[in-house]
Length: 144
Image (cartoon, rainbow, N blue to C red; front, side, top):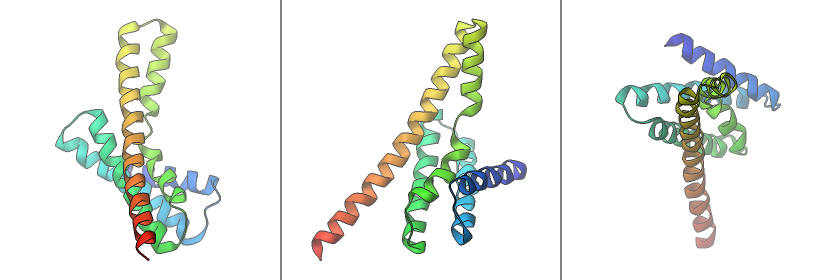
């Protein structure tokens, strides 16, 4: 488990460096990858479908990004992208493509379904939290 968390941290850091994030924001964005993967593993351990686990983990990542955006006075995007990198279903996508090339229709169907559910879970989780935060910000601005 510690190896997975360290790898998630380093993977998120690699993407944060790729997007030219510097200083404390680099470390915060990298920590987001570690925390989102840790949350994913915890929710997966509790049980549930790939879709639900990814929705919850992505929502956690987006909430983390929104909080850090307010604290560090930066756009939430620079925190949410590295935080969700560990959630991207690379293995399932690889096996889906491999199954397509080798002609294994049953495996292609299974891995494509898993990839689709993971991708939709990530999108739903991020969109949900981001939308709620945006609505709250608009409401707060209207009150003042």
